[in-house]
Every structure is written in structure tokens, then in C-alpha cells.
Amino acid sequence: MSTDPIDADGQTPLERVPTGIPGLDIVLRGGFLKAGIYIVRGEPGTGKTILGNQFCFNHAAAGHRAIYVTLLAETHDRMMQHMQTMSFFEPARIPDGLYYVNGFRVLEEDGMKGFIDLLRHEIRAHNATLLILDGLIAIAESSESDGDFKKFIHELQAQIAIQGCTALLLTNGRNTYHPEHTMVDGLIELHDVLFGTQAEREVEVRKLRGTDALRGRHSFRITDGGIVVYPRIEALLARPSADDQWPAERCATGVNQLDAMLGGGIPRGTTTLVLGASGAGKTSLGLHFLSRSSAEESGLFFGFYEMPLRLRVKAAHIGIKLDGLIEQGHLEFLWHPPTEDILDALGNRLLEAVRRRRVKRLVIDGLLGFQEIAADRPHRIGRFLTALANELRVLNVTTFYTTETRNLIGALIEGPTIGLSTVAENLILLRYVEIRSQLRRLISVVKMRDSDFDSSLREFRITSNGIELAHTFESAEAILSGFPQLKTEELPADKAARRPRGK
Amino acid sequence: MSTVLVVDDEFGIVDVLETILTDEGYRVLTACNGKQGLVRLSAEKPDVILLDFMMPILGGGEMLLAMAAEPAYQRIPVIMMSSLREDVIAERCKGYAAFLHKPFRVSAVLSAVARVLDRMANDAA
Image 1 (cartoon, helix red, strand yellow):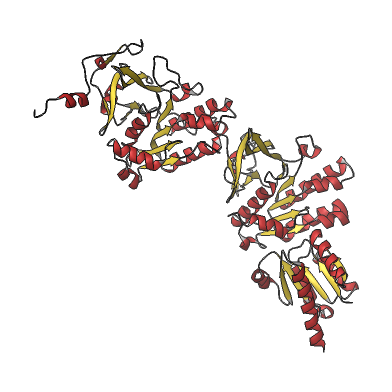
Image 2 (image 1 turned 180 degrees about the horizontal axis):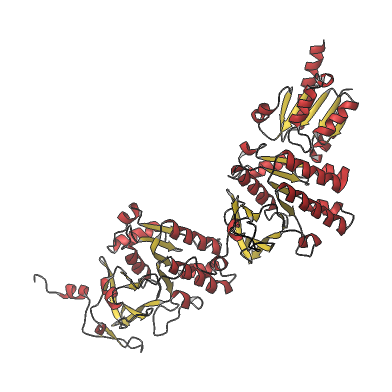
């Protein structure tokens, strides 16, 4: 169990009881308060029993003791059969670390007083510091009045406080007022929500006495390892984890001519949006950027569309050598199809990968992937990307986001409608242009944070040596007017192609 | 008619056992924990006890210990029941006659009870 430095009064330290459930302790800011009494409410099937069992097994694994008291029709062996498929279920913890009892008959025969006596006895007999009571609704139903039920909660509070035991009371119920909610130290709700045809589970801390929590709803999954909560990124990172350093250094893009346009490279720790039509070279530019990964500057490619193997082959075809970097652990590829996923699961996975390898060069390939996953909640994407970008900034990560323009060719450029400004401290535009019945590529730096830059349009090619830029801005002209004309300056590849043979 | 005492805190299991054993011609007594089980023993002498391991107030292991200390109860055979593995139970309980792993089938319960009663009858003969 962990201890907070000081409680709200500035006097007594408040001891925490971590649940050990991934993500939930972040939402709870470290866990429940010791000897507190909490209600966990949710419709059948939302995961209450799993949450209770997972908490118990984690508590026992940490060397403490827990008791699980049911008032349900489901038998313990049936419940254990369901739990044993999950990795937290460790039979050796039972019965010394975790003890299951059913209190229904005692409640039925001896009433609430008998049941309170049973709980007191079991907590003492097993020296338990965690009590899970599954089926609070049975007590409510056996109460003759609200007053009786409130008395039960009051007596239970007194018992667990004396014995230093934390209690979770699991119950069904809809979002209506219940008098007991005013008495307990916290109220946690589990929801199963439909977004279109996609179902998503969410947890919400409605009340938490004496401590802060990440407010609002947070997605969670029931996995083979039990419950995993994904704290909402914008709540988790409402304030970035550190101050912005702004080191005023430059970070090479991997394309020397582009670095020259940028005055020596991208400002370190900034976010760059690479905007361009499909196939214009956004991913290739990202791969160039990651080709400069090293032991000091770990790289990460976080993509939604192209799988890692294809990307490695693609890089090799254009002369970008990544295999050695991957083998040495300087570069990692993470691929996530933008199908049935949770926005915050992705955000947390990205941050975990960045922190784990202290990534300094990051390419998020396909900003649209985040938008597709958040399609049912479009209002979130701007705040999500802002929080993510702020955190990456304070971690001194130089980030390239790639995203597609809607139109393949033409003077009109339509980028993503939301979240653009937060990820575009720097903006690089890749465009197609038709010249003499041929599609040619152009690159330009549109914006760079607090820095001067060469704003000219340059033609570029993607060759077996990677991205090559023309030497001067004169290679293309009048593009934005919609009537491009090719000037005399040519790419090195053009010159080579036209050089007379034998010379 | 043989008498079976069923001691289990889970009312669903007690109800099922009471029904199937009664249908089979046994007289059935019930208790919801070890303490209540000992109270039943002080008033009646069952021929066999079906005893759950994890129960409130007084668990199956403790009830077995209390029975061992009382000469009048020492010859009553006990069938331990648990969802835990038998080796876990064997580490903590001594002197039981048979073990039933939960969840169990009706046929397993009936055959365990019949087997234990037969053994007791043979021993007596």
C-alpha cells in the first residue's frame, strides 16, 4: 500500500490501496483510500465481478489478505471457472490470501444485524484489509426502509474503519439517486456504451472523498489479463508531465536539401505536419526522418495503414537503410489498424512506447487514423491531439504527423478540418503538379515555429537514393496560380538522364 | 434411512444437494456454516457429512478440527467439498473420508455418499 504525502487538512497522511488494475490506479490517482467504503455500480455484464476479483488477486499478490463475500445466486465455483481464464487468477492465493464466502443465508435468516456480524467476523478472522461485497442490491431489497439500509452502510463504515479494511460494494442499478451514495467515500460507475454499432466499456468516478480523480469517463477493456483501463488522454495530460524545455536545437530531417531550406533542420521538440496528396511522399519523408535514429535519438514509426514489413521494403527501395537501426533497437515500428480500437488505448500505447524507449524521433503516419477511430466522437479529436502534442513536446520528442489532402492535384489545398493547428508548429506541404503532361512533385515549407525558413517551392523526386530536391526555387513557378511553368533548373536526376553517353 | 448433513454457505448448492439426496431416499439436514453444523451435530447424529471448505463464521477445516476433538463425532465420515484443488484441501484438513471437487455432477455426489456409507457399514461388520 502506498501513502500520499499529506491529506487535505495538511495533517494525516492518507494511505492508498492500489487496485493493481492497469490504468484504474491512474484514474484514482494511486488507488482507493485505506479503510474507505466505495460503491461500484453497473448494469449486469459491465465487469463488476471481474473488477472485484482482479482487485482481490492483486491485493493478495502484494502480500495482503482479501475476502470476497457474495450475496448472489452464482456459485463461487462457477465464478472461479469464469475467472480462471484470466491471467490474474492465481489459485494458490486461495484460501490464505483470498477467501470466498456466501452470506445470503445469513442475511436471510439473521437479517442485517447477523450479516454485519458475519462481515466483522470474517474481516477479523482472515485479517483482511480488503472486502469485496458482491450483490449490495440484495441488502437493499431485504431492508424494510431506506433508514435500515443507511444504518447498514453506517455500521459497515464503522466496522471497516476500526479494522483498517477497505470495502468495495458491487451493485447493479441505473443512474438514479440512492441515499447510500451520500454516505460512502466513493462511487464508481461502469458503463457499456454503443457508438453506432461499436460497443465500448467505460468507467467513471462519480465521487471520491478526500482525494482527486481523473474526472469523466475512461474507456476500458476486459482482456485475457482482466480489466485494462485507458485513462482519457486529455484528462490524463490536462497538464503535461513536465515544463516545456524548448532546447533551440535543430533536428535533421534526413534530407539535406530540406534541412537547408529549414535553416539546419526542424526545431527539436516541435511538431511538424506533413501535408500532401496520397502518394506524394509523406511516408517516404517520415522514413528519411527516422533513418537518422540513433542510440541517443531513438525513433518510432506509429502507423495505421502500411504494415511494418511493407514499410521496410519501401524504405529499402528508395535507399533508406532501416534494418540495422531496428536490429540495434534504435528504431521501432508499431502498426495499428484503425478498426475496432479505442482512441485512448492508442494514445496510451503511443506514450508508453515513447517513454519506454525514450523516443526522440517520432513519425505518426496517417493522422486520419486517429480521426477514424474517434469518428463517433469527433468533438474529442482536437483536445486529444492537443494533449498528446503537448506531452510529446515536453518529452522533447520531435514529431512528424502525416496527413492527406483531399484533392490529388490543383491549386486548392484541403487538409484535415480539426486538430490541425495543434500539431502544425511546422508545416511542410507536398503537392502534385501537372507540367507538360507529367505529374511532378513539389515541396514547400509553409510554416516553422519561431524560425526563418526558405519558403520557396522546390520540385523533388523519390529515387532509389531517396528524396532529392532541386537546387533552387526556380525549378517551379506559378504553382499556386494554377498555371505552373517549368523553369530551367533541373533535378540532378534529370541532368544525369540527359547527359550525353560516353562523357 | 441414512441421514446426510449438508454444510455449505451457498444456498444454491445446499438447495440442489437437499433435493437430489432427498429424491434418492436420504434424510437431509442443512447448515450454512461450520458453527451451525456443530449445532446440528449436537442435536442429531448424521451418517455422513457433506462439508464445504470455505464458509463464513466457521470454515470446513475448523469444523473438522472441532469434530476431531469430540469423541462422539469422530466416527462420522466427512466428504469435503471445494472448488479448490484437493491437494490444497489436504494440506489444511486431516481426517476426511472423501473429496468432491466443485462444480460436481449429481452422479458424483450420490456415488461418493453411497461409497462412504458402504465403507462405514463394512467397517462396522
